[in-house]
Length: 87
Image (cartoon, rainbow, N blue to C red; front, side):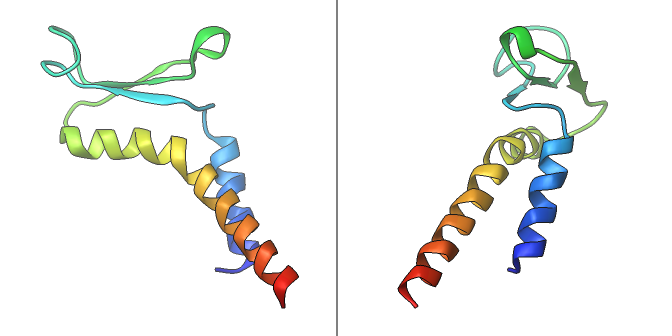
């Protein structure tokens, strides 16, 4: 993956609503309401993303991806930097 591709991924992540995102599934995480992803927390709490129809596994993936993709990209950048230092 090129540096440009990694930079583009981070730019897209940084434009999205701030992490963390937490998935809430009716019947699993609470008793009544609708499936949703809560965005932000505390003073940075933002809107809820609600779904008309979604598999719980897909919703969990979306929330997890928002939280983990920036960390994975940073890890790739760090590893590439360490590799460049060795060479």
